[in-house]
Length: 427
Image (tube, rainbow, N blue to C red; front, side, top):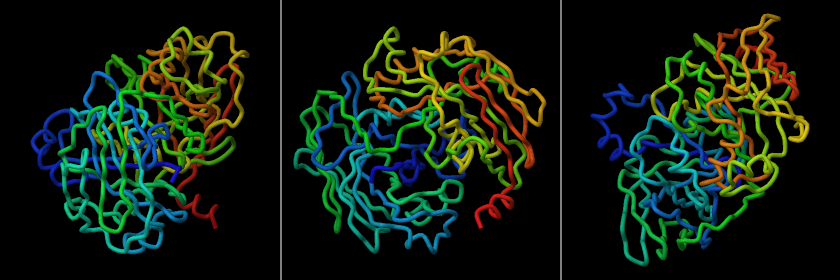
């Protein structure tokens, strides 16, 4: 249980009922049509009985939920076949700060160190009416049933595996009720359900640095981090970093293919400089930040804009589809780049220059990004930050050759194929 932990928001009826009126107003305009996915990265993972430090000055809330653990590779799984891909279930605590909106990924609210303790897995044959109980210091604070979820485990596996190939050890958190339990330093939270080992954690005021070296390295990505790109999409430059997380399934390599889904109107490339973290970084200053960088590489962060909804924008269906993040395997050492904020980026499609920019035009530069993330996340060796893309987006079609290049860092070649062509390659 140390691979990707996917979680789904707004999957409990109490949540959608409470937000029903707001979801018909800007910025949402319409209720969610598909599951609202997010990722709990490896810095959040903890086990039973682990002590977890709470952030100072903000209220933390406990969110008891059920986790389904994938037992084998799952790709485009039908609902009625999903049970055969389940290794078992576990209890989980999807900790969060208060959420006041669902428009942008809640990185600062949900991805803090220790914000996803996971219990011990056990087999269960029936979980659609499971009662989950939360106690704080031995006193019951909440009791709810998985019967009140909009989508059950099988439905979520089918929906997620339609665009993301799941691997053995991946985890899906099934969602929480609207009501979350406020907790404080000194509390012990115990979550229980029939047939599963309980999950108990003590919470303290000590935000200690805890590494999770056996977890999947986290790929953070930046939205709208070049002002000209923000203007291109009719947005203003953000006031703070717009960070989202990309799942491991989306990564592929140089000279590989990326799949354009059938019946979509607009899939575009994004040439990006990628920062590779070299050592554990927590609460580092902007001035110290580059010392924690191992080096740099290049990625192409494709997006399918047809799938964009105004919930945790951009969502996983847009950005974390299989094959949609080709990346160079090589890393250029930090010392080999004289000025990371003065590098040319470009994208060439079928020999035609389509995109050109310079890293000096980032809204938030590399030292700022490393420092900012490290204030609430323990960055670890191997974690990566894709730093955004300049203007110059355009649609790509099957048969296109797409080359992205970052000056002094590398050149990445990729080819677009249709779903049918990709399926033939897999045979």
